[in-house]
Length: 329
Image (tube, rainbow, N blue to C red; front, side, top):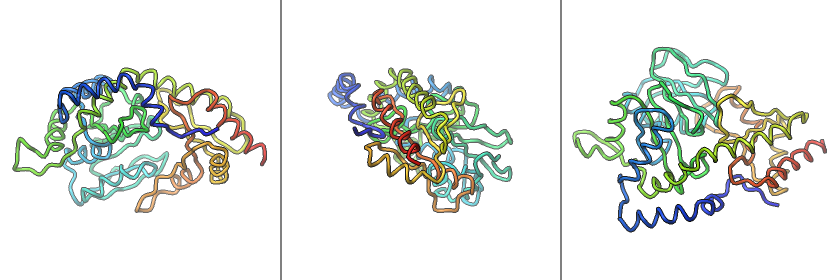
């Protein structure tokens, strides 16, 4: 048996009739850029997250970049960034000429900075510091976990393998701040209303918005199915010597199921690969030195398949192969 980490073909097949109908409608009308489907998606997202505004963009990375840009982050500023996060969280700070100041897992961000980035990795909910300085949430892996946020802005990704995935790149920024929302809306579209400023092209295209609106209707079922898969892993893998399971934190969602297998990580990865189980090493390399706890955690952890399209027999197969691996050691 082969168990894919994520299977885009399965995803499309599940929603094929609805998505084909919406794609034909959009293409026949020629509504391709910043049209009603984008506006509807922004409304759907803002209502779901619980914010006043949502601005659709071409990626979660751009959402982080534009959040910092709208807050006035400039070269020379110091921005606190979690060490354990995807490279984009730190990358956008560097691209603005600011300095990413890393803080380690389980530690508070430094206070001598101009803004703080918080990353909710794999659907967990990280604490929000209240230091009287702006906070941007990297929520790209946490759709459904963050509700009614009070921080300055939140970034979301709709990369195909995300909880709500497009069939290409996609992202959004949510906020309750009118100034940030208006600034990001203009910046994403070249500042066409004010050519005295430089902007960029960071628009979510209308076709992807239409697809995401279809999948939004099924989001609650998607979240519930992922939870069921994770709970099965938690139950069946509990008590195996040599592994540490993720915490089933109240309110979290399951973008990924991360298994801590210590110094057996690489060996387990190769074993499961031979057995047809596609997993991913939980590594987020940076071009700058990361913090010790983050490096140790990333070197010992593996992401298991955990999505709404997995069949019970596929989940069982992954579990059985993990049990077999540790029984042989």
